[in-house]
Length: 239
Image 1 (cartoon, rainbow, N blue to C red):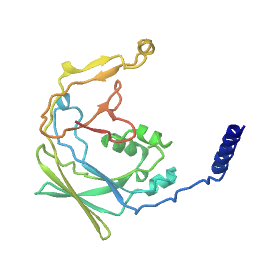
Image 2: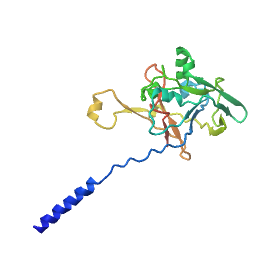
Image 3: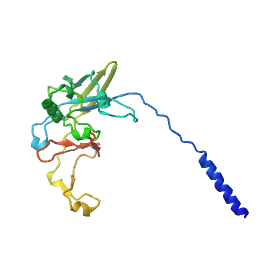
Image 4: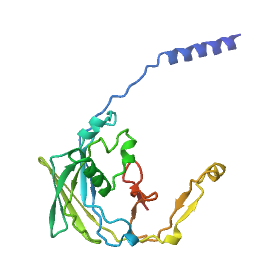
């Protein structure tokens, strides 16, 4: 009888402890606002059959960071773009001033040309519920279409009020993919399901130097449509 009483008291004590627990809501810490820079510089080439599409013009996108807990509607998204910066790119000899351009300033036909020339993917915005047809997007673009070269180093300078941001990059050598190494296989997983569909997984083998970290960006094309990068971002893979 005493043993049962001990167990009963233990259960009552446990229930009392659980009943005294209080919910804890951690404070929301808002970090300092920073500038987010995305810059793109590609080497010029005149052989699309060998190297793919012609190089995109050099361009830079400048936005402001937001809190992790912020809501992001179309109006908030459009307000993130910094439109009053001074942006220059130099190859050590010539310095170019990139011109600010926003989609909202252009006619529909010009908007489409700009979206395609920059390789922007409408699927990126569709994940947020937006579309390039009615959403503003701003970038600083080289309207002279300077012919950038493989092996050269390019220097970026951005002035936003009293803030100066600098960066540099070197365009690496191009390592072509052997067409014979490309194959289309059944995706891993439920093979029974995939065998009943047209879905296939593209596999590519690449041979390049193992002495440096190599980065890859992929694009896909369906029929005569434009070439698009992966959804959600400029997906970059390091090997």
